[in-house]
Length: 236
Image 1: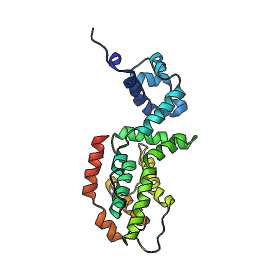
Image 2: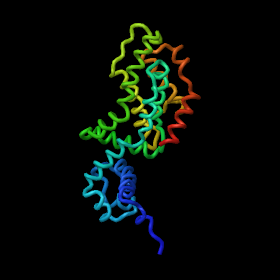
Image 3: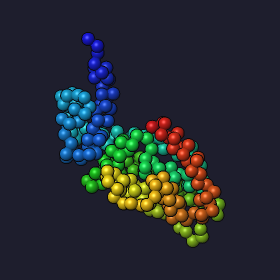
């Protein structure tokens, strides 16, 4: 008799498989609505086996939060290679907007993570904080340094003073657009294509940060951005 797929998985791989199966269920039904029975069924295991790896639903949920925080950290590799500059600010804002809305990598995984983050914000906020600290806060730091570099280069309108709050707005606006897009129905009709909405959002944010229009036009390169996004997509 051939060995079943379940028996071939190591304990680590089995736990990862259960976490992957649990993510959309917790995202769709919430922490209270999800059941271990449904998660086990989705993972193709018995509840008894699930409990061998995770002793309770709360333990499973906590592990899922850690799994989501640590996953898909491709952006950190990009950040490690950049030098603060006007170009870094422009292209960095563009990449972050794309990473949040419409998302980079597996669409379902991205949607599940956003739903989990939103649920966390409606609860104790611990998962949301950990996720933002891991995936967004490093970008905010680079943007702050790059904004100062842009000011030194004379690329920022005079009289503009930007702090951490304004830089965080880059994420917040993109995140709001993603949340509005989660339902199956069209909640807001913007009258433009999604690609155009993303581009307009990027330009709106860059202008909000005080960059001159000519500077944005000089550094915002949609073709280069597309190649970066494709590269990130392949690495996730």
